[in-house]
Image (cartoon, rainbow, N blue to C red; front, side):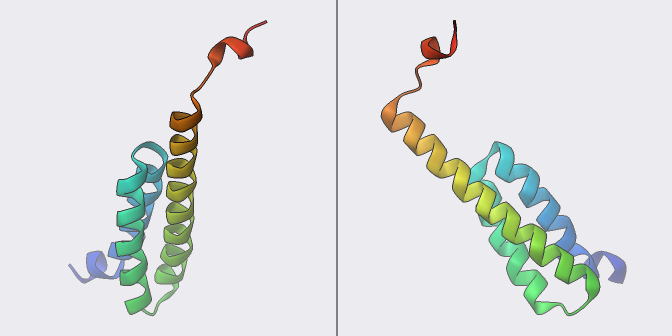
Length: 82
């Protein structure tokens, strides 16, 4: 059980990264939770979790901004075809 406790921030950060790609807001929220947990822990795994959490938060924010821009401006797929 202790093994799971020490790796919880790492597991959460990986889940946050996957969610950031598909459900951006959930990825951001889970990334923040994982970042807070990894800052409380002081081991090698928590440093990796901190980096992955930050990447998940940034990717989630980028995808949210892109979706807002594409929704506002509209996506014209006809210009992509020859």
